[in-house]
Image 1: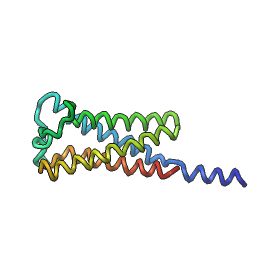
Image 2: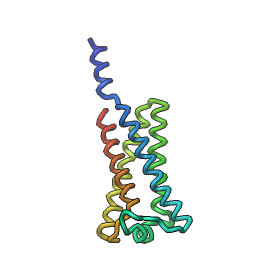
Image 3: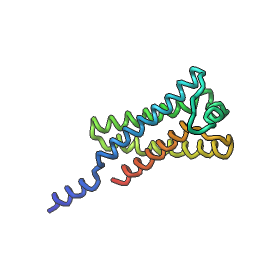
Image 4: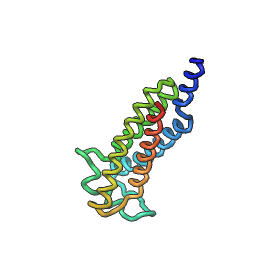
Length: 151
């Protein structure tokens, strides 16, 4: 009887595959978005922003760089860490690895809120690519909370 209870408990706490693959897909999308902006920053070429006007204003503001490092590059690193940790979980099946990724999404969530605040209230311009990154960060945070709630 105890084995059945333990088995049911294990199944209820198991992380659904869709969450794991969503982590991979969203972090990859965020990486592509942030890396595009980082490459544009370092190449000095303008960002084409046809959906929402304001990208150039946001991306050339003083808030686009932190201690000489473009925020977009920090975003690329963030999304890479999430992707690598998720891939490591798939490879090792060690739940702790995915838990680290889930906890780390809090950083992206706070950053997304901060940069949205800056765009709307301080810079008074919206960058489409920044919104894509914010949506990616919030989605990862929600997925992370789903992972952590499965303990």
